[in-house]
Length: 177
Image (cartoon, rainbow, N blue to C red; front, side, top):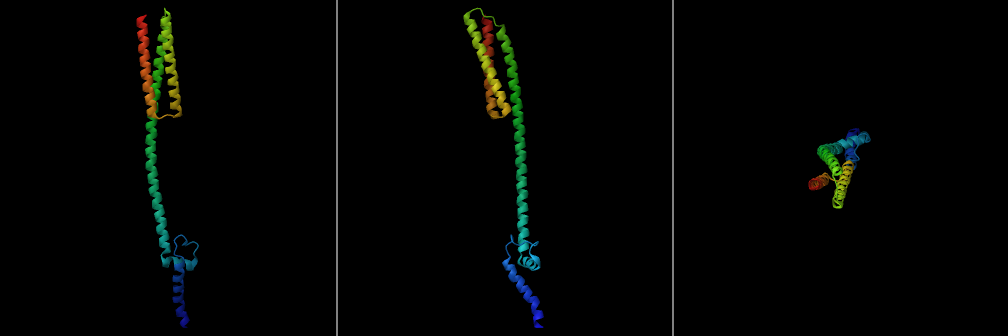
């Protein structure tokens, strides 16, 4: 009956031997290992390694989630800032359009007695049409977001400057008459 006392020892040796064969945490799955594989996984530390690997994956996922949340907040802030800029640009373009309507009325009222005055009035009307076309183009760019906010601000500043110069030219032409 010496073999009966040897049987548990032999079982442990066999389990230890098998545990050396399944020490890879990726292959160490308690759901599929069976009794001997399970015992081998526990004795070899394979299950502990697998659990540690899963915890590391979970931790990495949490860090990534936090990074994505921060990035989402930053993008939301940029989106709100861009929306505010575009709203400001729309308001400026509407004010320019309204100012141009007044200039058009002034041009229509302008009396022309000479050919030079008629040519000057035609030139002023062409400049006003060009400004109106540029305003329309800027509005399309705002709608399509095809140009950066900084570029749109520059365009509005140039349009405002050109419109102010035109208003001055119209006022001067009306005074000279």
